Image 1 (cartoon, rainbow, N blue to C red):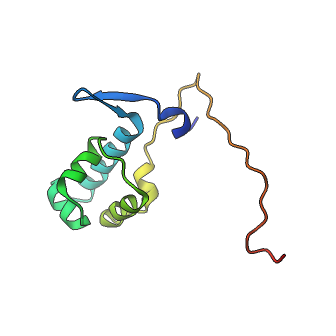
Image 2 (cartoon, helix red, strand yellow):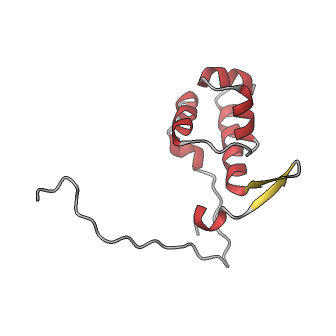
Length: 114
């Protein structure tokens, strides 16, 4: 089974008395792991390198902030990894949960000649 934000985004954890979505906590843990593996011991030094505020990086790592795609790309660039690396540890669903399947109608290749 794979992690599905459509199913798992409702899971949350209390951190310092504040309910935090589980996927943000997992993302923050992965960001911290990659930051330390890249040799950035402090959030402050890494944040400066990435062009972000230290408190924002701290919020991301604690699961308090919800980064945009632009921030995810910026973080990946500062870490020297592909943006997908930031999502590598998203958890699988439990066996009793079935991921939602989305069925989209077939679409023509947008570059196909009409």
